[in-house]
Length: 508
Image (tube, rainbow, N blue to C red; front, side, top):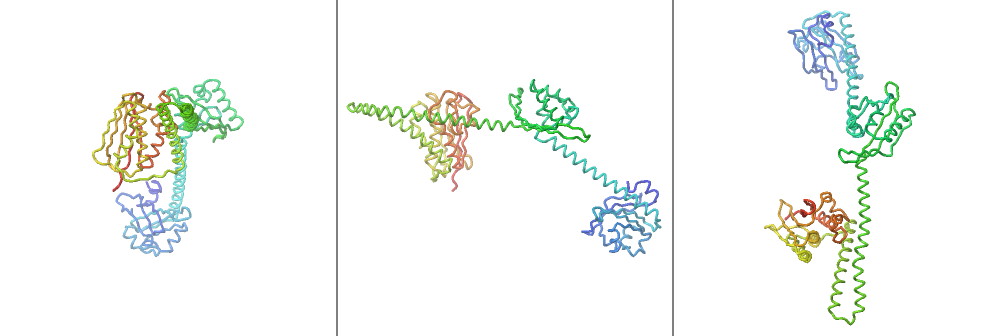
């Protein structure tokens, strides 16, 4: 229906009414909405303002002045030919000023000349002004409504817990996080007395303590900051932790209420526990280091002592002592070298000497290094190399160290007479090495940790084989430096292990 209303249109006996959007910066008048009697010609479209109005009448409209023309054909303020082309013979135009600019206009027109009475023009002005005011108020109210809806959505979907306890000590507002977490066992929560809900959630005397804290803030206005709260989720076998605070606020009705904000600190607490665990592992490492370094020293010291006493003994006994001492010294040197290597990697002082080399050459070197340990365990080693050469841009010494470490682990943590296999293949521009054993396996909770510094998955299961637990950390660092990845897999304890090393092939 027309902006003027059915009664006004009937009273004026007009044929057409149009609502025009004005943009003087582009000299455009756009008619999008109109009301016409049956058979009347439509004027919906876009027009140039200067094609219809002289500069003088544009200035008057810009100042908020209306105009009426009984017969456009003889009106010098207008361009008669343009109006006639639209079938307009008489017209009333009421401008609408918004933000100090001529933005809109209401146009009443007829296909025949007619005498517009002053009371009719005044009625059109008054109805236009009232209607526009009503539209503006509706627009503002719509903006407020949408703003309130947006605020509700932001509060409701906030990841921070939020709820309000009103003056009647009832829960009046709550967001989704609160319903899903703090009050998950209270349904419905909104509208329920807070003290009743708390006693559902918490045992005594904690429930009474929390209720007292809320009442104190509601009555005194004193804010409260909690030292933390632990929630045990028996249904999920998890423990959640929260930090929360209270503030007294004034509601729209003038009464006080308490708003509670709480934050899920579970991940933070878990991170703290992980740091404590890392610190514990560091202490264990230092103890292990002292123990491991002390063990070789005792036989070396005893050996030296006996050498002094065996000056007259046979060469055979002296040779055995020398062999034992050499073995223990080698063990110590390996551990010290590992420590030095970790230190250099940590400080970024590792220098790579890369060259193009066949992966098979590196693996053969690693096999030769690890063969004594494999044979000592009575293991069967099977090797299946890729048919085509897999050329890497690599530091031969360091990658040989990586694969020798993996083979040594396979030999150490596999019972006598076990199976160890090496398989290589190409995956596009990547070379893949699989080292699999039939050994003790890796528990699922340790798969993500076996590459961490000073971690030994076997120690917790009574299978410690010596060393500092840094071999796999070194292996991962060396593989990373070659742009590759290393991954551990296992079906669990007793089901063997597999380590997959992926390295990029050299570009020709």
